[in-house]
Image (cartoon, rainbow, N blue to C red; front, side):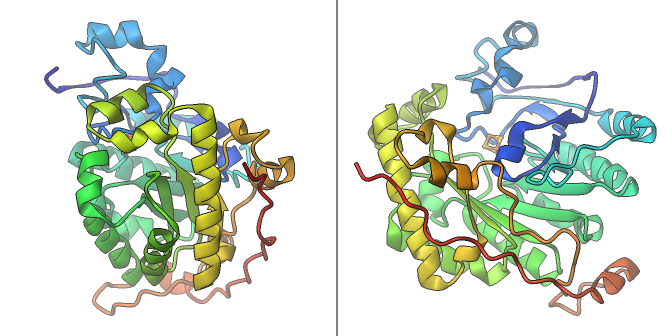
Length: 354
Ligand code: SF4
């Protein structure tokens, strides 16, 4: 299928989100449906967001929304105005312990995948900040660097998905996304600019082992993320088929529930060990899957589900490292704040051995 692009309108741009179970947010805003990055492992096309719109997408020229993921994008041009209208009337705001009232952009697409979505994302972030909302950006694209002027705020955290630093492997798994090396440079640039940062080491391929995690974490710690999320590849949906079509044979080792759980547990132990070895275990936040129940002790799962991250939303003390990046008055004021120590996390989780 040739790439299909267009626009679409939606009834409400602001959606309550179940991603509080991962400590991410209470609301999401998606600036588009579809994603031109088309990562082979992406689970979004298997979710109701796409599955329930099969007929609608067919009318727009998308016959197989699952297998053609990456070849269609419908941007929501008017959502900043809609959001302004919504927030001007909204009198209540959900703020759970694990979601912290945060609005995430985006859960079903990449907010900075191209200049069109980046423009809409910028408009949306400005509206959210005007109404004093907390914002979490999650992207694979360095384009957010162009928005440093508005993202350098105590109410914004910027995160990039960085499951590996191996550009060659990335081309097979996420062929249309910007290179991990470019993402890493963007994070270092954000660090220099004094932006609150986090990283999603997700999803990791089953080939990654203790030393790989250790090498990656050592690099990641150079931009001082406030939290490090992790999860392995879950290839048990149509994404498994897309990965096989892309020639990723390693996916065969995690396509049934037992093998997936076995790999999840092994990598969980490895990344915890790696984080412990280099002294960043207090930042690690495991995105557990409820389907692991029965494979790991309930306590280990329940510890992470709906857990608040160690991020500190109330105090912003990150200072720009580079004098070439001008300080706005707001940031200068923010830098006077004193950072509270992060809450200590428990020790190793106890896993059930196979
Ligand atoms: S960038 Fe995110 S939303 Fe887009 S295809 Fe990749 S995983 Fe899916």
